[in-house]
Image 1 (cartoon, rainbow, N blue to C red):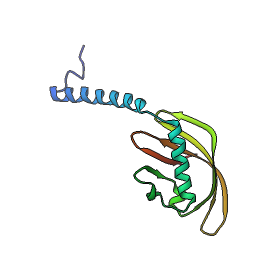
Image 2: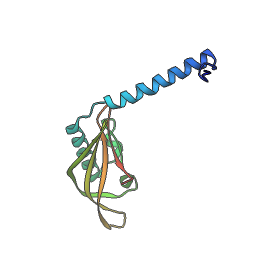
Image 3: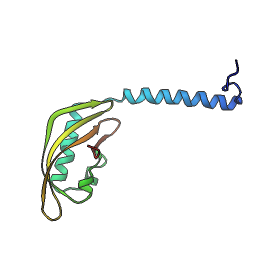
Image 4: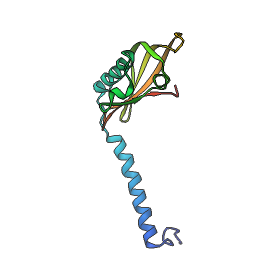
Amino acid sequence: MFSPFLSLSRPARCLCVLLVGLAIGCQRTAHNIPLDQSQAREACTEFLTAWKDGKKVEDLKPKIIGRDSDWAAGKTLESFEILPEEKKHGPNLHLFVRRTLKDQKGRATKQDVEFVVGTSPVITVFRNDET
């Protein structure tokens, strides 16, 4: 039986084996990244408190790397509550937040949003804009 793999040159076969091994290794690594759920909740609280206190997201670096499109758009955070529901998904914790925002015209909006928080190798807090 003819195998297309064997018809490749030796360097090409080595490259294929290397790429398959790398892909398998990357899959395993993503599942081995530790998640500290308590630290994730604290980081999300610190992130939102900084916004509420009028700070900039850059003020949190390098301790916390994060982004919220509403914060970037200049909206202010009036209040927030991290809800008890949470979902662990691999190296990330998904937290749900009830918050009140004000736009530049002073109009308040209440909304429930989801944040994805990681704790290793660095602390990250990003709002899931797809929810």
